[in-house]
Image 1 (spheres, rainbow, N blue to C red):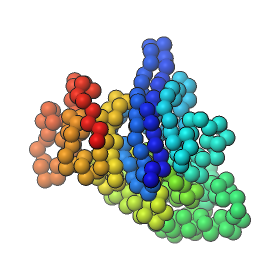
Image 2: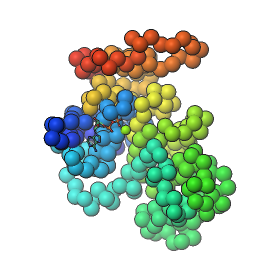
Image 3: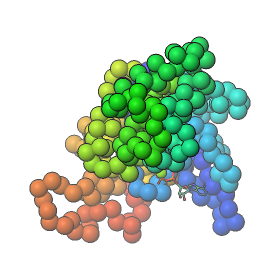
Image 4: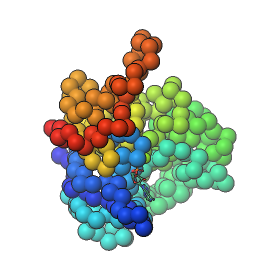
Length: 287
Ligand code: ADP
Ligand code: MG
């Protein structure tokens, strides 16, 4: 079963210079309980695709066409109230820089409490506290009762990102959208956070849309992979297929641009993604 079906989505930006087709006829599915990774270089339309699902596209941007079926309902046909109800409860989002998403003026506990107040009206103060501590424990936060009373700046980058995940998961969303959530973290912490997301997914059956430009992260996270290039999907495949048998020249170029462990020799320019090639000239290899 698919939790999400994105069909022929077009999201354009309008300016005096013309139309920027940031997302141009994109279709893909997110199965229940699975992780779909969108991978592609900077500017390929990954974030705009995810913001379109959340309907957080503002002027001069506009979703001009398509369907976003979530849990059987086309979100593009619903009113603002319906969407607001879904955001943060059925769909949660984690962004790259947790410091900008956590308010520095309030304690970690206060901020988790606000989320729980909004989405778990059935809980009283004590119930919310218990749920918050449970969420912090779930994300592997050391000394959760103490961290509850700390301000964000007292936490490390990895701990702040864990708080963001705890907040996102506290809503028990059906879909978690993570847009480059570990890019700012060092490699060890990144591995821990990714591992944590996988474990939470196993426990709660959450579907994850994971956005990254890093194929190493794709290898660790993805069930299915969507490769984006200049607003288009050039290839869709299972993670296994993609790494074992990439079909599209752009996917091959991306895979060649990963440094191979043990081979210290610098890659020749030809092996990396060449900006002079228009990869849209090749037929799309959507499987
Ligand atoms: P990615 O996340 O893959 O790096 P984005 O989805 O952010 O790329 O951007 C896709 C395209 O949309 C880019 O060409 C970018 O310049 C354009 N874009 C994104 N946000 C805006 C905006 N607020 N105004 C105008 N163009 C935008
Ligand atoms: Mg982005």
